[in-house]
Image 1 (cartoon, rainbow, N blue to C red):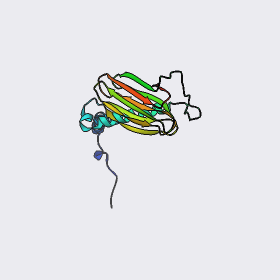
Image 2 (spheres, rainbow, N blue to C red; image 1 turned 120 degrees about the horizontal axis):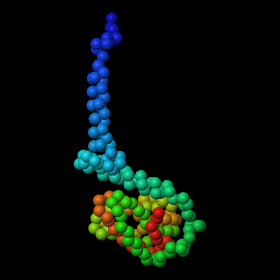
Image 3 (cartoon, rainbow, N blue to C red; image 1 turned 45 degrees about the vertical axis):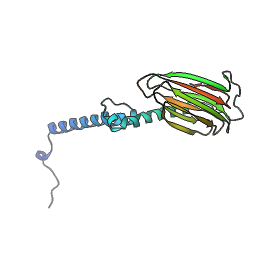
Image 4 (cartoon, helix red, strand yellow; image 1 turned 180 degrees about the horizontal axis):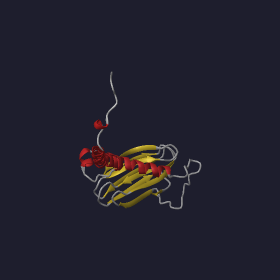
Amino acid sequence: MNNNTQSNGELPSTKKLLKSTIIAIGIAAIILITTVLPAEYGIDPSGVGGMLGLLKMGEIKVSLSEKAGTDKSESVVKSASNIDLKPSNYISQNGEITISFKPNEGRELKVTMLKGEEMNYNWHTDGEAIYFAAHTDSGEPHDYSEGTKSSDKGILKAFCDGRHGWWYKNRTSEVVTVTLQVDGKYYDFREEF
C-alpha cells in the first residue's frame, strides 16, 4: 500500500521557504532588468539587453506604439470631397521644413494629396541616422517605407486621398536636425501635432 501523506518532518522549514522565495524574486528581478525591460520598453539599465540585441527590438516596439497612438489620435478622416485644397497654412508647391529632434523625440511631417498624385521628396539629417516611417493614415492606412537612415529621396505617389508623410524618431543620444524638401502635387505641408 502506497502512503502519499507526508509527516511534518519532510516539509520544508519556514526558513527554507523564505530563502527559496527570496532567490526566486532575485532571479525574476534579474530577468526583468536584463531581458524584459530592454525587449518590451527599450530600457536597458544593465547593458545586457543591448549586447543580446533586445534593446533595438524594444525601441522599435516603443516607436511603433507611439506611432499607433498618433495615428489613433487623428479625429477626422478627410475624403476627396472634403479636403481643403488651400488651407490657411498653404506654403506652395515647393516646400522645405527643418526640425531639430531631441533624443527620443518623435514628430510627423505631412502633406495633403489626392489618390494618384505624385510628389518628389528629399530629406537629410545633419549627420546622424534617424528612424523614419513614410505612411498615410488617411482613409486606408498604408506604409510606403520604413527604416533608419541619414537621408532619403524619391517619389511619393498617394495611395489614397488624404494626409501622407513621414514619422521621424530620434533614437540617438544627440540632437538630430532633419530637413525635408517636397516638390509636386500636394495641397498642404506642415508638422502634425
